[in-house]
Length: 166
Image (tube, rainbow, N blue to C red; front, side):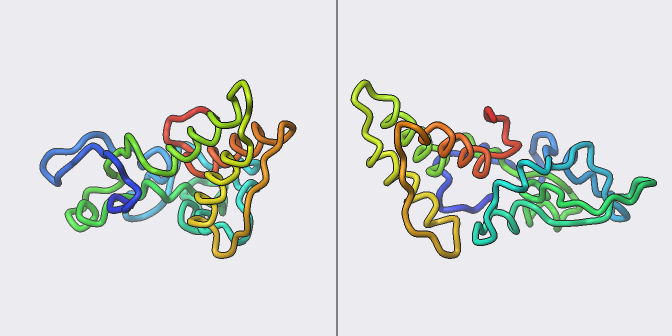
């Protein structure tokens, strides 16, 4: 996840100089069990289609180490950078401040909010993003009635738990 070709700018960490472990609150793995502070809401999990590759990349089902032993998909996108993991530094990833996918979402929204909306151009940006995220995807269609919902839900799917608006 730290080596994506879509990253425009990320905060660079090394194994001797790194920030907090963002992934800890989502996994809190201590080499024995998972005790997350947060688990994904069911409405979020339901946003991902079966063909959406992010679903299996971002979420992995584990039994938690709490007394109730809840088996639930946990947010795995912050499990950690492989180089850090090899040094027994868990849950550390380099924050992606700017990335291509978010730029597509921003531009799609901007096209739809113009005084003379260009829903076709917004749909083109959404299609480009989805074709990179789904194992099989055709094309998006945005209208005056659906554009806000479509882009907002895509924003949740793409940027979930990264500190962006939901």
